[in-house]
Length: 58
Image (tube, rainbow, N blue to C red; front, side, top):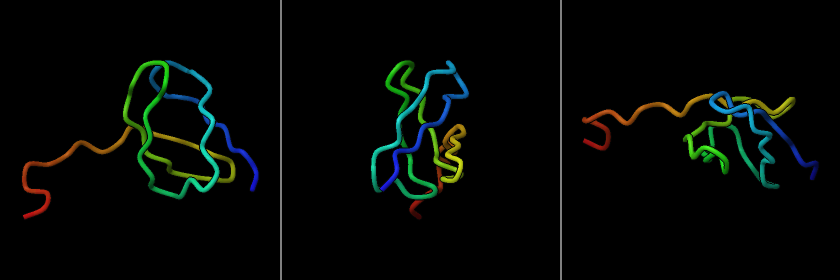
């Protein structure tokens, strides 16, 4: 399985996505700690993770 890399939108660090990463998976930037969501895999792209709403899980 190929290794994918993406750039953190917060600090511009290069992120290496682990093998088996799937679309919409949540990851954290190892440099700045920002929570990110995988929005594309080919090419790999990440964006800020959605904010948790108060009524989630109800």
